[in-house]
Image (cartoon, rainbow, N blue to C red; front, side, top):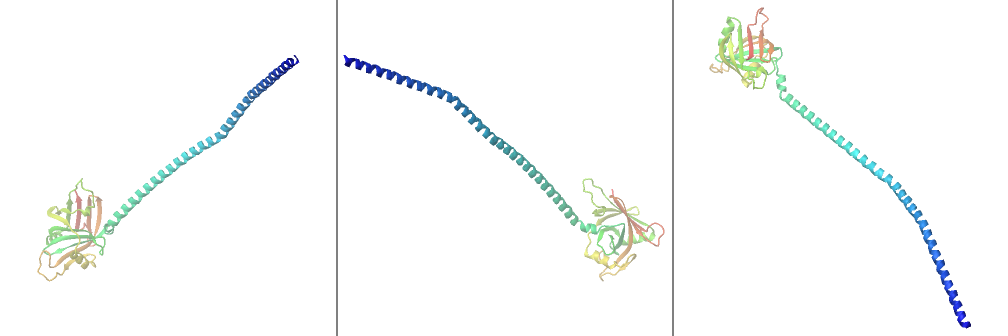
Amino acid sequence: MKTIMAKSFQDLSSKRQFHWTAKVSNEEQEQEEVTSKDSSPNRNEEGKTENIKVHSFKNPQVSNTKSSTLNTIHENKAEDKQESSSATRRKLQTIAVARLKSVLTAFGRNRSNFQQGLGTRVVGTLFGHRRGHVHFAFQKDSTSQPAFLVELATPISGLVREMASGLVRIALECDKEEEKKVSRLIDEPVWRTYCNGKKCGFATRREIGAKELQILKAVEPISMGAGVLPGNGEEESADSGEIMYMRAKFERVIGSRDSEAFYMMNPDSNGAPELSIYLLRV
């Protein structure tokens, strides 16, 4: 009997102990859950604050990146503008240099023409073989190259007779071509010749040759006068024999780019010049 009661008492005590242990464990679990619930908001808040801190830490980097990108874009635009302006400047400089070179080249080509150009006072020489044609040469001075040399179809003997009878007017006319580039009047190649109103054939512009230079060199010391130069001893012909010449100073008058006149200056004559030559482009 005692044995049965002792076992039942032990069973009851063990059951109570089990229930108490379970209860204690349940209470501990509840407390842990409560603490975990209480701590989760704090963790969330800490996470939020960390995220905020992270975002707040990242925002300066983003702004710095944007600003650096904008600066790079502005720098690239400025560089492009500088490159384009420098390229334009170089192009303009190249064009200016090319134009200057072309002007200098043209000046070099025409330098001889400028040096041989005629002024308002020129030296005129009329010469030719007795049986040959008349040659007119105009020089800037007695030592310079002729700027204008023309051969007339008129015999020099006939011109001498005309001059002996009175005043002589010689007109040289050429055609004006609109399509042709305008050049100096003395550069025209072919002329129609009129002597005192009478047509006397054609005149042709000539380039200075060795024979013409020799004649002009022979009369170089003569400022004004007329005479005969000895021939080369051969039989007289149109291109040989004695050479008749007349040399004087002429006044050059330019009416326009299509008209010029040369008046012989004779100090012994008080009236009109004995010889006048007109160049006309009609």
